[in-house]
Length: 219
Image 1 (spheres, rainbow, N blue to C red):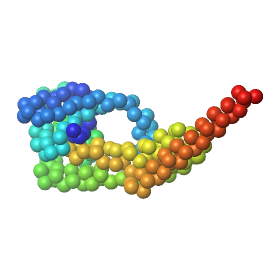
Image 2: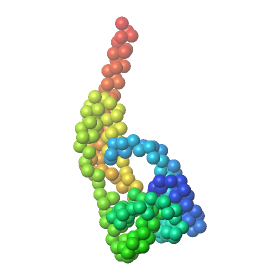
Image 3: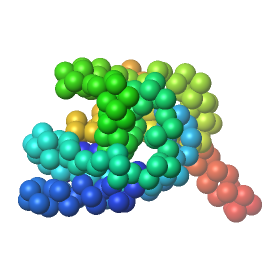
């Protein structure tokens, strides 16, 4: 099974799961651990709930979950934070649906419509296509971290090997599309070379340390 999307809350993930159960669609939900994000080089402590399914079922799942959070504005808590959003802020939710929950996305459309800014299916489709192209594009080359990674690798540091591994293999999840590499093929090649260099340097360093220890014991 491949990743369909990530959810920020357990409630959202299992709400989607119930709908898939109704349509007898096989799936898995996994709880992701915290990780180190090589793209921003920050520690991601948030826990995500990952919905996985057979990729051939992605189009069906998309249709099933499309209208998942249907809810009337009158049923929402008047203090819900989206009600204080400006039109531009609500439009940003529409433009970047992947960064928001399905509920917020649905409410943003309803609020814009209520404020006299209805969005046709054609406009929504164009926005989704544009966003998909943006998401599939590679992240800028992280030159500073490539330099740091090589320095650490040369001096036998396993952290350099780790940076090389993340550069060469890091992927991002695009809802309904699967996983895509974060960095360009060139950056991934650099990452693999960094891993090899770091592995060799670490091995040489280890051999030297063990040899010196052996000589010292002989004396």
